[in-house]
Length: 265
Length: 161
Image (cartoon, rainbow over all chains, first blue to last red):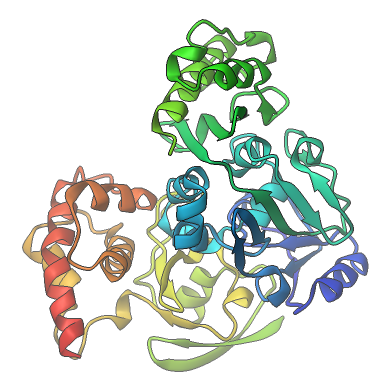
């Protein structure tokens, strides 16, 4: 790892101004993606501004079906939240199968959403839940927030301070993991409220997370695994790498969607 | 260089580190606590697992500076006097190791699993929860056996304390 300078601010304002005063500083949340990238010298920020001690980014608030999760909330805290479990099964389940126990203690929802790794789990949930991403500058709908692989609308000095959404009546998440790295080769989050269904897909799309419109339509008419059986996904829009071809991933999208519907609560 | 201070195995320690110094290197090289191992470079193997403020985390993916002010427990800090921690004793009894390289991390992760689940543990849960720790010798069977056996014993010890 190249040398870097560590900073520990206690407010969003202080964190933003710290990063602004550095040469190529980055925000450090749980560090479960950034630090491994730095160890491999794939990233070399001049400074790291630690967000884990920013009080205003902590905490989960559930008011009826309105949910707000602070950007510095860890996967473990989401998994451990009875309130999240009772209003949004899919997100709770996602947090309990995300990474491993050690990673869940450190990694945060804000960090994961800001990083937008093509295999990250949360972006699929944010898309399916039609969530709002709150930053230090603005509030953006998830559908506009995620731009492409590892790309979002965030500026270099902009922090994801929270995410919020209206909990769906039913939700579910299933993923197919790479047997070695355990990252999602495809993960599908389904959310149903009334007759509206949304379907977020991660791990598979060549441009990163996406909303699968055809499946959402089919499931709106009939919320059952069979409803997507006759749909097909265009392999042209899928990732292809040594772990799986685009045709393989296109099929996985359908299979994971079926499983997510079957397990949704 | 910056100065960091934290509690390690009950003792207040401090040292000079670079911004990029990883916690695992601070523990091994500054403090000489070489029981915490480095098995990979990708945050996957879990050999470096320690407890930070009571939670099992990977010391190879935390900066020493991030651990400023925390309470750290390593494999060297879990036995009491000459008596092994129940998890260590169970690994010994059930032959939960062969080469031993992954063992410190396995034990620290397993203690955390029992802390969260108590004795209400089944094989499937143990296997799922050990996802962050890789062992290349045992095939995991005896590790899982050791964790299940220790779950009851660890709870008894905590109740007695």
